[in-house]
Amino acid sequence: MVEAIRFRDDDVHEEPAVSLDAVLDQSNATAVRIEAGEDARLLLPLLDRLALIEVDFPVFGDGRGYSAAQILREAGYKGELRASGDVLVDQIAYMRRCGFDAFAPDAPLDPKVMDKALELYDAVYQGTTDSRAPIWKLRHG
Image (tube, rainbow, N blue to C red; front, side, top):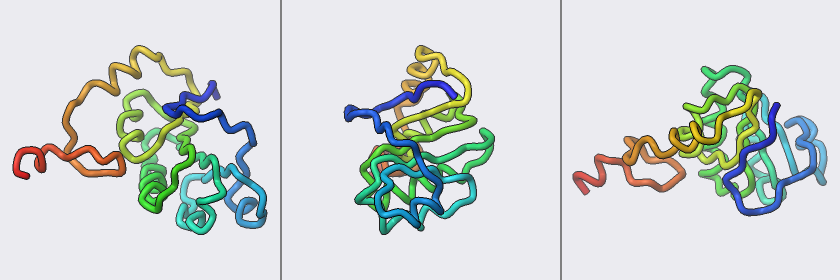
């Protein structure tokens, strides 16, 4: 794994992330890692004390992490939401739209390519947690 890429201004959270089971059993953990297939909704009662939630992407085609991010952001989670694992540069823009604001990819990402990918599309087709208006709403009110 390479150094985390962050789109946040706050300090990097240094505490290692514990498993979902561990955070449910501990009252003092502030960082958790959700593995693919684990239910992010179990964290909803704990969101106010979590500074970091790391969501694992075991393979690039596994989209369950997108749903976890959307659930957590819609529930009001404001802390760092980090996608880790098999994160590819062409997924970053979509992950950002779902609420991810940090990335820990298994392989390094070229910053110039990532910036270009993030700037590629001006319009979006669906509403998500990023509050950007979908193109249909811009066209038809």
